[in-house]
Length: 101
Image 1: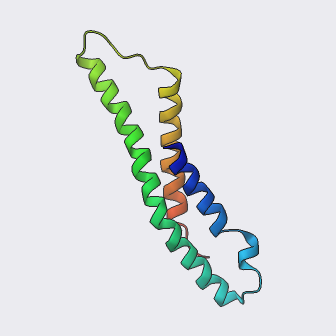
Image 2: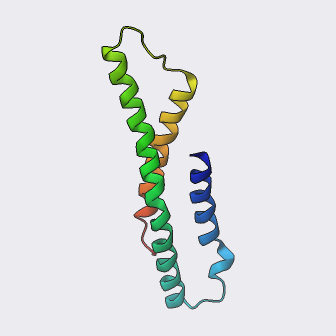
């Protein structure tokens, strides 16, 4: 899953490099930025799905602990995963809803 998140992040960095926008007139630059946003949103959707899967995993763990005699511990990695998932969901939604302006 880390590889997918890194792929999404590197795609973002590659699409929105400053040097990609050099040499365009203002109208051409806006059209190019809009095209980059559309390309990024195709991959952005995958990031949202995988982040949601991490949140769903935590919910499953909490439900299991409600009904099980032997509880699953909330270890450091689970806490880190949920923080990462929530922050990724927030970032993917903010970046995905950005306008070319």
